[in-house]
Image (cartoon, rainbow, N blue to C red):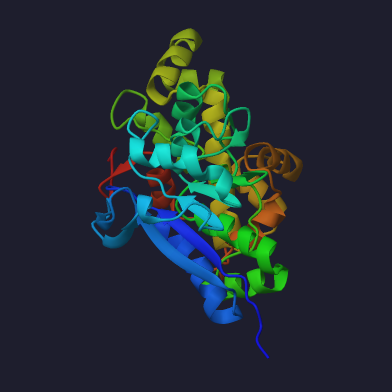
Length: 349
């Protein structure tokens, strides 16, 4: 007696300078599903001309040429990302996608691979995502695409887009779940030591605030604010501390940080609260006080607005066994997170 097994061929498109993790993450998911659960995935690495492709990480991957593949051969095609935008996509890949996308059951992209789908016209009028750093460029170059900058991955019918780097794993796990059910997807996630589904969006994994300033008159004040989050950090108080008029302070602060004092303070307090949730076993109301939110409700609203999850959910997902039961937090780590440390040394002594 013979059993007919449907082979699901997965084509992963690479190009010179693509990102290794964008390829390796999804490939590992599909390969683990086949190895651990008997999923009938067959993996192929593809590139415009075939041969060795060098990722920007320096790893060489042997690929089959795109044009050597018969139309309709693949069940799923995934396009990797790299240091590209809509103006630097390989035209051979774009042309192949235009000609063959309707002969593939499912097509996806990781990170800036979304630019390939957009250039091929496959994202017109659809929601899509890419890495948060590249979302503004994707929206500017392809205004017909509805870019959702904070999504881990987006599915619009047969077209999937993942934000980048490790989110390709999330997207591939969802594809395995669609093909073979939750049990196998969960087994793969456990084997890879990742979540089957992550709460929230990219904003919980990227830094909410990026201070690029390394010098200037406000640097001592910014450092002091990180060290004293529970102090009165209203703009009027900060302006007085900086010996500036309120009007000049607002202008100087926005020039230095790119945001308003209130927004910077909230992002800073959120960063402190996150680290206390990760590193300590303090009660959430005590963390709210230490981070400067005063009340748990104010902290909860901030988490919901900026991360899309509650403090309790954040702790459940990201907490490690606490080595600081007293609730202390590493100030140097916080200073680095807010751009106040360079090369491991404080920018202000």
